[in-house]
Image (cartoon, rainbow, N blue to C red):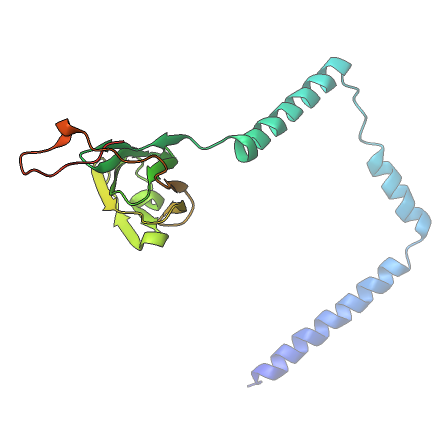
Length: 197
């Protein structure tokens, strides 16, 4: 029996010999024959003139699509919404359907926040939402509202993403600039006052 290295060596030598032989055959062909066959193959195609209006319509359509893509990816602003305060908690509903709607939420610093995520999209990417700055990762069951509660202490822009980091939203935390006033009608039965702006 022959060993494997002898078989591989024989196949390699045969391939090398065939490669050299075919190279010599191509090198020995006259240049006229090669040029003649090239000219025959190119003469099979004919140029078809298109009407000017069709060229213009294709150009305008292409420029329109380029402009739409630029607007969509660079110039369109994310939909923003300010959270509404109810009983001392800033609350907002966020629909999860091919992204986050609204994708930008504005809240005040130092006040509790409740984000109610309602997932409509069955894709596995949107099964989870993550707030890396607040160390929150929450699963979002399909067709259910999932509340996420936390209190942002510092003003700034904090990103939230899906589990695969493909879909993104932003939580914009603003400093409380206006003074807080306490109204006499906002005192509850325990004698505690709630703050209203």
